[in-house]
Length: 368
Ligand SMILES: Cc1ncc(C[n+]2csc(CCOP(=O)(O)OP(=O)(O)O)c2C)c(N)n1
Ligand SMILES: [Mg+2]
Image (tube, rainbow, N blue to C red; front, top):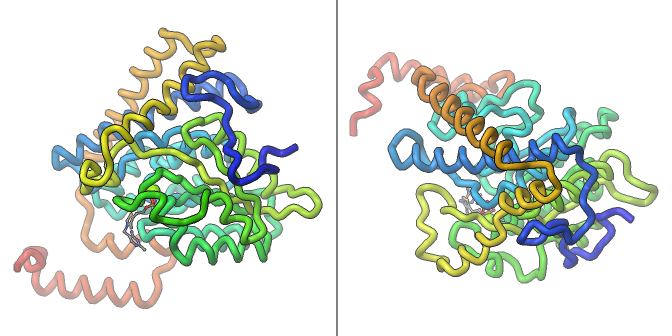
């Protein structure tokens, strides 16, 4: 029976908090398992460095991902090359797996418009900051694939628990059910939408159960268990591409997890949540859990971990160096990168901006 055929209240788990096996270990080769671990460590290290760059005034506002590596890497690794990823603004780890270089993520948060320009072959959309706005885009992209007869590709869309209160979420799921599109809707339920707790977001017992209203499978997974996340995402992708008779393609996955840090570097979480809560969730940290499993099954040892550590430190340092040495962007770049061909409105705005720049000079924009 598919892992998706269960009650939306029945959370899927593979590893417990101590890394012991409590469910069905997915069929993943040893190399990919170690890659999963390496990328989770890389995402954590990148995150720590990014927060410190912001604190040093070397980067703008940044949304940290620590605590969410299991959900991001576990799901992204399940994608095949031709699948699509539609992220929110916190998916730096998932995006890296899809082929978005760390330098590009840094440029985005350093305020370079070029940070919006996704590599052509990575099949990923740019970060979406307006909450839930990316979910109808994901349904539209999946519908387009279906209309083109390309249902061998799935579209994995990430959003937060707060996004499920937006109309866009409901419209996107409803449409996906009616048009039977190859979508995986992946909710990163990290318990908070800035300072609004999960229980103020919805009276539903789970977010996964919201799928039922749209006729879709809804599945809750331990989002800090990368193996469980991989299992459900892989099953949802397989079903999106190749449903059984009577099955609908789309799935809603609720990955239950916690963000260890602030909402963004502009937020102070100590004013709305207590240390005891943070400590309770830190005990579920996805990284040591996977590490214990990999060590105990002979896939990882001290020597390999040392190699991984020095490799990720060098990788992140190189990305920072590359991003910081990128030339300062030209202000006109703000009109680029959103469309393959500029719309008449954007062209007109650009012309107006350039004429004004000519007239008053760049200094003129800085006057009070
Ligand atoms: C449409 C819209 N409304 C409000 C905001 C301001 N805002 C930014 S993040 C956020 C909370 C989102 O929480 P959630 O969906 O749980 O995602 P998380 O940040 O926890 O990953 C809000 C309200 C926004 N960006 N877009
Ligand atoms: Mg949230």
